Length: 219
Image (cartoon, rainbow, N blue to C red; front, side, top):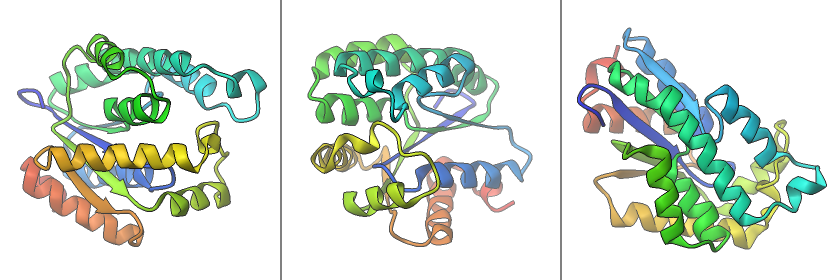
């Protein structure tokens, strides 16, 4: 959190519904008249969206053969652009910034999932964010098999990371759960198997209580 802006991040395994919930929360707060900036990683800027297409491309053989180090560097590049072009300016204006994934995704996916050096990733994080951290992280959690079943049964294109395998996704989920358990003041865990409207109400209650946004949430 900056002096005036509020930075909220949604995290979770594939198929958790975090993107839907990030959008619903943004729409809810906007009804109060407060500025809300909804962004995502990778993406959030023109450059970031081009990087996203490279990272998540599904069928291209070169994409499927991407080195873990290349993957981490591309995520970092997209993040640096998103922070500099979108997130930091919005926070300085006093906006509520809601981001679909942030630095903890890199720790979970590239650090533990791809087994890259945590120390190396920490340095990349500092470079990309310039010290910006979320005021609150919302982990929407559900069994890996349930999330992957949703992804493969959905209408959205299945991406390269979806195909990484169940054991990879279990490592990712375990990392998220560990991070949330270590910092209960900075995280809230929501059951992603609950109906969409139930999850949305639970998130709204948490945001109202923890972020001092009672007026915005109840507008």
